[in-house]
Image 1 (cartoon, rainbow, N blue to C red):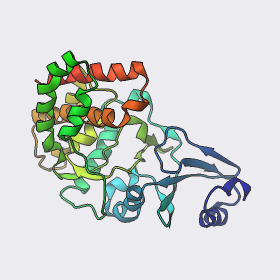
Image 2: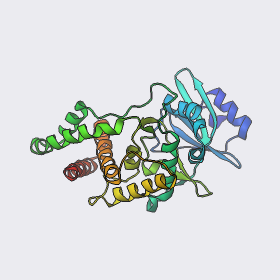
Image 3: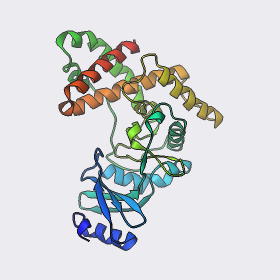
Image 4: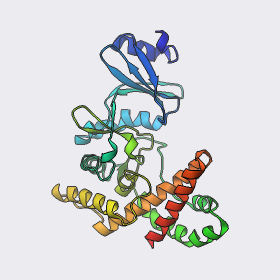
Length: 293
């Protein structure tokens, strides 16, 4: 029990009774979790133990059972535990990360998102106090203040226009994950892809999730945005389903959603970025704003 003593007694008891004594516990770096995320290894099995936000706890307990085909693309939940204002989940360990060579318009990733969006299309989320994506005037001013006065003045009208145009992204078309970046995907031994971070479960345009799958700011010639749009729309067409946007409109929404995600990221994380990364993001955002014209 010594390895487990840092966790609540109910969790210790569940793990011991279910899997026996752990051989090793490793705290995972770079995982967004309220109290940490751990890989717990036993003699012939390993699990992920995560102290999380209530939204992710509720996703697994109230939303996941709505899925049919998409269920295979989320980790299996083995157990969950709530104690006052702390929330824990015990999940399937997806040990293999999505390889970098699959970070751009991967067919299986897009197929998983197609299933997710269609199965959550037009539905309200059965949970309260979930994350709501937005882009407001305060965020615009916050990002403009990061540039020099000259550059900020040059970008002001472009950023305000992008803010106005982006409001279409936040209409509740379907359920969205809102954090589909490539590092949040894993691959099982059977080859199936898994999306394993659900703290930002929300409603919005599919373009939000599609855009965040792209590394960085996207492509200068929109080739990746176009590839994603073509593949995604083809899946809707083959399923005999109507999609509310044309290819051109979806490409534009993906570009807007990527700009919004960068604005939100800068608004929340400027203080923790190193100088080079900070400058790179500001430069990339400015270039993308000019492309939106």
